[in-house]
Length: 307
Image (cartoon, rainbow, N blue to C red; front, side, top):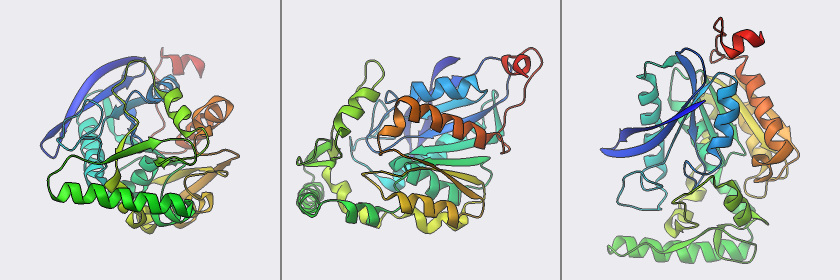
């Protein structure tokens, strides 16, 4: 596996990225990685890339505008439509690379990025496959799942940030992840520790997010677009998810014309570590083998020798 720096333009601004390539000749199938809320390239991407490249897939991971090292004046603010545009631009970019097979591009999203994968997959023809893991596909259901006191504090913080934004003030930030009882976007037990554990090496990641985002959560419902996804779809369902209702994740697979689901006895953050992480990778690779994205084993390559 090799990793190289890359960049592309979205909305007139530069998005920084990493391109991981497997050993052997190309062009390779490519998995475009749409990360979760507040996450950047240094958050667990390397672990996924190691497994996917070993199986013959390139991986393209990027920072959304305003996050990580990508450009964007609105720092650490979640712009949903802007992130969709970034994903489309990333797919366009990899489709123009000589070492990537444009007919074998997969969109993989996790957590909030899983919702993005469903939403973008519904409007993007030509994808070889779509995978969404522990996906936030119904913001209204996720908001209802939150404790009432936390939801009220979200509303106050979100309104304060929105007013600041209207008058040109600095954003009002809340924690991205914290322990139960604190004001944060995610307060599942171990949420902050899980985020910290996923950081790979030096990173500009900050445990912050502009609070105005919480006002938009109930209106973000990619599940309503599930029937429009043309590609094969795999939903990785975390049955004990503390952030997003597992039944809603599974429902997307039933609604999509070519959807299927794999269930794990896991919480929202459990799926990123240990045996559950390994089993989810195995499930994803088994699914991809049934799609047009399946890599071709070249004579003399690692895959060719394994065959």
